[in-house]
Structure formats: structure tokens, C-alpha cells
Length: 181
Image 1 (cartoon, helix red, strand yellow):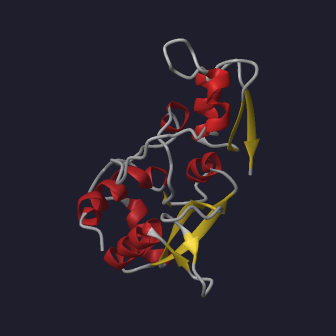
Image 2 (cartoon, helix red, strand yellow):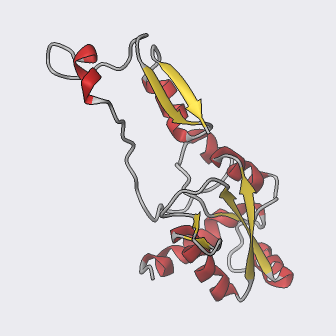
């Protein structure tokens, strides 16, 4: 389904399996352990994030992340077990704690996460966006027409424990950041 899968497959295996093995490719004991075990433990955030990961009408897992995981499993000749985490940071923690072999999740690369695990080359790049109700834009408009949301009068809702929360707190230090599940 994805032409990129072949390109990132070896990057994913080499870089993201860092908790299961050392860097002596091709003698990667982590891959041998996965093959011997018969399944790969894939860390994933438990909240549905279509098109990356979601349950379909038959209650089956679908999405780009699942397709990528199935492709890796096919190449290794193993099955998979999803290791669910309540947040993206906890997905990384599961790798660090060796509760997962890889992370297949829409993870943003942050400095704190990169201090803990290696990231592959992203298979998709997403830009952050901010929605503002047009009825309130005049309230925060500067003389030059730009919008200033870094004031004490602004409340910004973000996904709890996500890179969005982290970046909102960094960019809008005077605004009230309201995390939600």
C-alpha cells in the first residue's frame, strides 16, 4: 500500500528497536528475540487517531500505522501484539522500559523523547495548526493585522500530554493552556 514502507522498513528496524538490541547490525539480537518469540510488541497510543490508528465498524484495528506494522510483521514472519499507552510520552516510556520493541504511533519528535529513543526518518510530516473562532479574532488583532494569542485573556485547548501541549506552553507563555483527554 505504501511505497515508503520498503524505504523506511530497515530504518525502522535498525533505529527504533534500540531497546531490544545493540547497534551491531546485521547481528541484531533484538530481531532474533522477536522472531524466536513469534511476535513483535508494538507500542501505540490508545486513543484513535485516524488515519493513523483506529477501530473500524468491525472493531478491528486499521490505519497507516497498522498497515506499516503488518508489513514489518510479514517481512519478519511474526505476528504483532499492541501495547497501548494513555499518551504519546508513555509510548516512548514503554520502549525505554523494554515493554515494547518498537513504537508505531503518530509521535512528534521532541528533544525530551529524542533523549530517550532513536527516531526513524518520519514517514509523514504534519504541521501544527490552531483554530480560532472568527468572531473573536478582532479581540486579539494587532495593528498590523496579526493575531496575538500570547496574552492572559486567551485560553487554548490542547490534547493532554502531547507535543501540542508542550509547544503551546512554550509559545504562549501568558495564555491559559487547557489540556483535555
